[in-house]
Length: 288
Figure 1 (cartoon, helix red, strand yellow):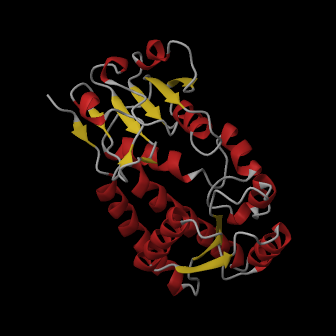
Figure 2 (tube, helix red, strand yellow):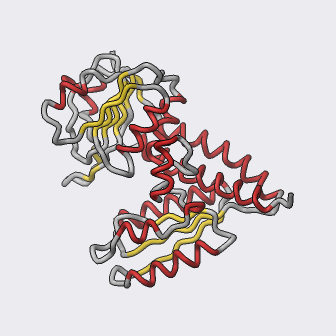
C-alpha cells in the first residue's frame, strides 16, 4: 500500500491564510510587515527563489523589496546595504539570498543582519539560542518540516528520528527541534558508514544532503515518516530529491514529494518569521 503524500503546497496555503489575519491586525495598528531581500548576481535559480518569495509576500499583504547587486560588486557595498536595512523601521525582516559569489565571506555578510531582523534564522545568536529553546527566529526549512509533521498528526515524542545532513541551515537545527519535542535523534551525513543501519531505525527520517536518490526503499523502516529536503536539478532539467520516491512510497507511511513538499513550507515560514518580527516591533513601540 502506497504511503500518504504530504502536501506541502496545501500546508503552506493554510499558513499564509493564518498570516493574512495577523497582517491585517498589524495594519490596523499602523504597521505593515516588511521583508527585504539582498540578491547578488544573476543566478536564474536565485532570481526565481526571490521572485517566488516576493510573490508570496504580496499574497499575504507584506511589503517586499529586493536590493540587487551585480556579481562583481564589492562586499563592502552589500554590507552597507544591510546596515541601512537594519536601521530602516519599515523593514522587519532581511534575507540574504544564498549562495553568494566566491569572493564574498558568506558568514560576514549573513552575520551582519540584525538579530531582530534575522528571519532566515542564520544569525549565530539565533542558532545558539536554538540549543536552549529560546531563539527569536528558527531556520525556515526545519520549521516548515515541524509544521508538516504536526499538520499530518505525526507523533514526535518518543520516536526514533534520524537526520541525514549536518548543515547549519537544515540538518543541525532540525535535530535540535526534534530533540526539543522529545524524539531520540541521530545525526548522519552522506559519508556515514553503514548509513542504512541508522536509517532503518527511524520512525521519522529527514534527509537533506543534495544527493539525488541517496535513500532507497531497503534503507527505510516500514511505516516511517520520510521527509525529503533535498532538491537537485538533473541533467534532464527536472528536479530530484534525496529519496528514491517511487521505491520508498511503497514502504513509508508518509512521504514528501520533490517539488511540492518542504519547499513551499520554507517560504511560508519565512513569511511567518517576518510577521513575528513585525509583531515584536509593534509591541516594543507601544508606550508603557
